[in-house]
Length: 269
Figure (cartoon, rainbow, N blue to C red):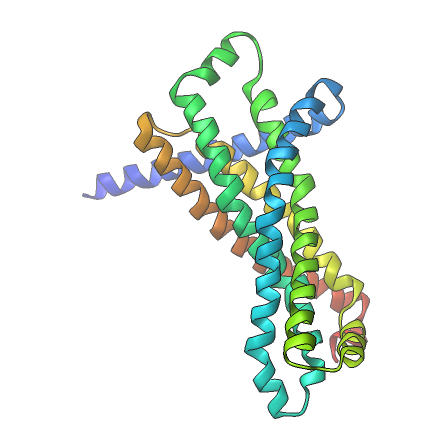
């Protein structure tokens, strides 16, 4: 009983070490690929699949987040006579938290699952071994373009989600709930700072890198058979989702500390 538990703990520690090596190898190879023009066509292809085709679902997600926030929070603010401040609450929530997190979660489901399934199928059918046997680094050929595409496009997709969230919140607040448009935008402009938008965009780099590396790792190390590929896709999404939440919490603490250092008086307001 104790021996089995120790064996499982050792196995998990070994998996963590293997993942750490994979992350380091992927990071180094991705940095090296930036300086080599022969990898650019692979990166462009992944940018099309990961970024361009994800725009509709990201924009829909952002729009409904903004509209739902407007409906949910209007009654509380209207009861205090502060309904014209609704835009501040919606826009700050969208650009700092809900936009980046929900956009990353949608990408983890759509892009992360696709990356894991594609690489997992190549692993099961021994295509990765064939690539390696021809003297080509599979990490450089398969992982680096996907990681770079996610790093570059996740922040852009978050900006799309933020934009549609702001428009959706405005539509419900001004058109449906009849809030004064001038007051809505005036209070929003006064309450939302460039720092808030920047924090959300910076989160995108970490979210994109995390879901790309986790998905590629699970694809490279999936078990044999259709069941193994399916389990790898499930594991990749769950771990990516948890990683996004953990990274979001860590960055909120870091950004709040930085803000309090450089703008101490504003942080007390």
